[in-house]
Amino acid sequence: MDTDVLIVGAGPTGLMLANQLARRNINTLIIDQHPGPSLETRALGVQARTLEIYSHLGIVERAIELGKRGTGANIWAQGEHRARVALSDVGDKVTPYPFVLILGQDDNERIMGDHLRELGCSVQWNTGLVSVTQQADSVTAVIKQAEGSQRKVVAAWVAGCDGARSTVRESCGIAFAGAPYEHVFFVADTEVTGRMVPDEVNVYLFQDGFHLLFPMRGKDHWRIVGILPPELRNKPDLRFEAVVPSLQNEAGDQLQIKSCSWFSTYRIHHRAAVHFRDRRCFLLGDAAHIHSPVGAQGMNTGLQDAYNLAWKLTLVIKKQAKTALLDSYEQERLPVARALLHGTDRAFRFIVSDSWIPGLLRTRVLSRLAAFAANRNAVQRLAFRTVSQTGVRYRKSSLSKSLNGLPENAPHAGDRFPWLRLKFTADGAVEDLFQKLCDTHFSLILVGQSNFTGETPELNGLLHTYVVPADPTNDEELARTRISQPSFYLIRPDGYVGLCGASIESADIQDYFTENLHLLIQRAASA
Ligand SMILES: Cc1cc2nc3c(=O)[nH]c(=O)nc-3n(C[C@H](O)[C@H](O)[C@H](O)COP(=O)(O)OP(=O)(O)OC[C@H]3O[C@@H](n4cnc5c(N)ncnc54)[C@H](O)[C@@H]3O)c2cc1C
Image (cartoon, rainbow, N blue to C red):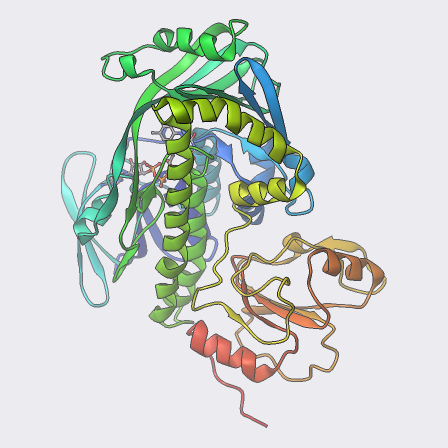
């Protein structure tokens, strides 16, 4: 065996997976057909859930330092400012990062690439996958090297992080169901001045589409994303100047363009692979799902795929779990991708419909709806949880088991465990739970379980236990996040609740580890 995991593709998804595996000491080979890292900004919005993962990886400070915090979104229609949605107000109890970080994909890739090198692993550039063939206990990959020669690599597992035209997906014969949109997007990195609200996202709605202006690092730097006017769709060698009249028409003639450093057009598709796994090969990121950029979810979803798979692959490779654990990757991530495709497709079709009725609705009704929603906390909270991806949950997964006794509105198995600040000793300081929990371990949180005397199973240090003592600060935090007392929560390495209930029993935990997680542990002898 040449490597435990062959990662094909060193875009954001492949780099995240490589980082997660390297820090868990898994032997990994990551290849990319390009000669070096991409210099294009492409995706720009880094969501709160991604920043939480960056924090565990130790790169969040660097990302925040390089990026710009987008703390609100503003809706404009017919030249007027119609609504503002304040992200920081609704998200500040949900996550340590209540904003969208505006940071280009190239910067994200650079930060992850640097960190990967610090972990002792580097991308092999100029190395393209040609094909894969699977055997019972390995995969043989044919790869093409810079000088054109081919060689074989035998890996225990292959991760296809190779983008929309994935060779891994094609080699496995997995269909990529969906269709292209007729619309063509343009994207431009510009220096402009105008009436935009500084440091915030500005959305201009108009009869035939929309323009999004994202603040970028540097004075007056804005990323503009929009739909090409139909008459420009098939023009060859299109330049930014061609879209300026439509921009000024909708964003107002106060919009003064100083320069444009990058302009590109692209036709988008909405597609999802019908399976995310074929035996020893997995699909992640754009190889598994692509959709409209509405909502800045694409790159973030790929990063979450990688985070979901990494801890599971690690346990299987280290022979601490049976391969059945890996079935939960598709079970959990495919529904997330389908829901995302459905949501972004509906939003996109509504926003860009060419018919005059939705056009009228868009500018009049949508902007009023946005203004109405901006004043409704519940709507804002739902919007924040959706866009930030902190609301993603896996309640139907075979890894999610809620025992009796918890109130309906308490966090349940499959939910991301909420962000809490707690005291872990009666006279100790208040600590940030996310900082305290280690994402390479399982964590058991015990609230009011003073009678628990049973042993937690022997997991070779894989399980850390935290007792939350009775304390007024703790009571307040628990009540805020609807965690009832008594209760217990077993949290997976990726921060999702695996098992929970009102009263803990050793046998329940052991059953969960062996039957749901398929961990290879010794059952404690019954008393
Ligand atoms: C112009 C543009 C603008 C975009 N804007 C946004 C945005 O604003 N917001 C957003 O969320 N998303 C946006 N996206 C989408 C976003 O860029 C993707 O979701 C993201 O790049 C997915 O990351 P990935 O790592 O899964 O795939 P990719 O970034 O596509 O990386 C795949 C990698 O695999 C490599 N590869 C492919 N085939 C092989 C092979 N056979 N062998 C070896 N290596 C291979 C490629 O060289 C590439 O480096 C945009 C995309 C484009 C094109």
